Image (cartoon, rainbow, N blue to C red; front, side, top):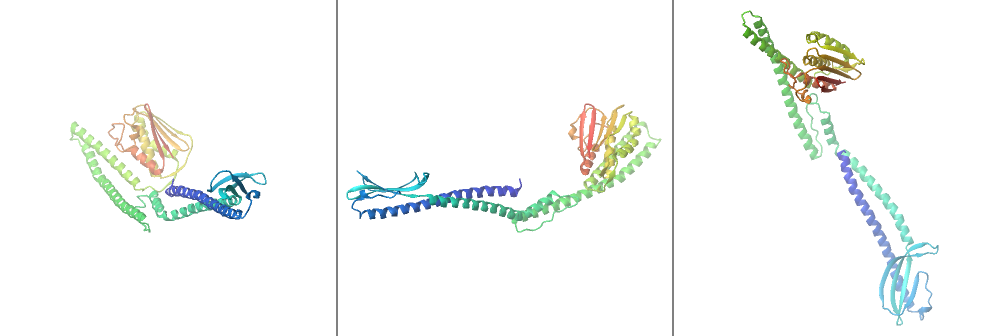
Length: 416
């Protein structure tokens, strides 16, 4: 639920409670005022009637109206007015509400009980006409509060949602800094100012780290190439003994591993810096066949049975360089970690590529294989960046990658 909607919800609950309570109080207050007016009228009518009866010689001979009753009380004493709401039959034979006043007075040493009644039909009709109007006004006020609240909230909270959109679409490599736009709301000004300061620092640190990675990676390439050439010359020397040759060979392998590691880190840095934005249409089946041809010697060396199964010929729009690196890493990984006389299967259908190979059983958590420098083997040439690069490329190209291991069969699926 959005913040504005939640705020409006509480406002509506409170407004509904107040308006509902006010409607009930108004209804009972109006009813009480009207009935009090009827009671006052009955009281004045009683006073006037008693005064008029004082001039009568024989009250017993009086025939009161249908709303006035006078009875003699054998014993009694004067009593104050007593009001009550009763129901009696009207001329149509229906029960109707009446307001009745009952009082006892003394006349010529005798006590008389007098009852005066007045119909509440007009009062009830008036209340019945007021109540629908009050409900309509209540609904209009409720709707007005909702509309005004939404309009005001939309205007007041607009700077916040603009900042939220900027954060949602924030791309460090492209946007860099979220600029602060002053508003007339102190809290939003503080939020925008803090956000700008934070992104300024993030952008500065990002650019500094990017520059360091690029410079260090490129600077390492030259000494690695020089040392590699010197070692090749040293290995070719005929004056070296067997022990020195083994040491030089070990150094050469370590240096080659360092070069591979450096290239992998450079690639990851370029992906992080979004340097692969151009796209084109690619036929994965053709690219896979070409790459597999380059690994024929490695496949033959391990006597690996391999097959390519194209279920659906598919064309995808993506970056060619990254997609080629992705396929090369997956096939290379499937060959490198395969076993002697093992198998390699590549299946391509409409929306996914599945590469499965035989290998040794897993000795680590499969969920960690896509992390940097995590590996399931102790191969000298393995640096633990292959699957990390694969995951990085998949994330960048918006592919989904899944890995599963059943016994000694390893399967990686890339969903386009």
